[in-house]
Length: 189
Ligand SMILES: [Ca+2]
Ligand SMILES: [Ca+2]
Image (cartoon, rainbow, N blue to C red; front, side, top):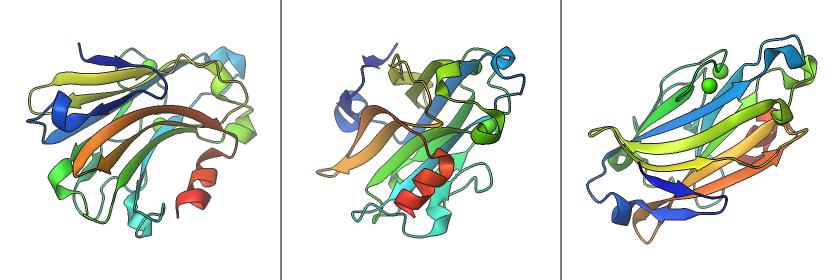
């Protein structure tokens, strides 16, 4: 068991996991299909942003159609279409040493595909979490359960990995937005 984080909580990876090289980031959720009669497809994405708050180029937006970052640091493990079952529904592997030096933050978001058309939102999503683990030892470092009761939001920023004084830290964010994945693209691209 790793550290249990609350909304706004932060950890310094260089202190909590000094030997960490490859970070697994697992994101999970459960949904109730009967709410809208349509399947829910939630998607985890990463924006790798620089000091100006923007991605250096489009390829630094990692999602189901762009599974690998140009610097080779991030590999998205692929699209899960249902969210069924416990444990990680989608995950990414992050190799810290390979991250482009101009990237200072990795923003982890989860959005609902076609939310508007299907009339879906995070009010119908439960058991959402983001967790970090050491890929070499399979040891969990930290986990954040998003206990927040979301309602109409279609996009949630789950957390951020950010570089401060040369070390990588993680912040549990849990902020909801209504503009879907496009809203994040407009903000970070
Ligand atoms: Ca998905
Ligand atoms: Ca699930």
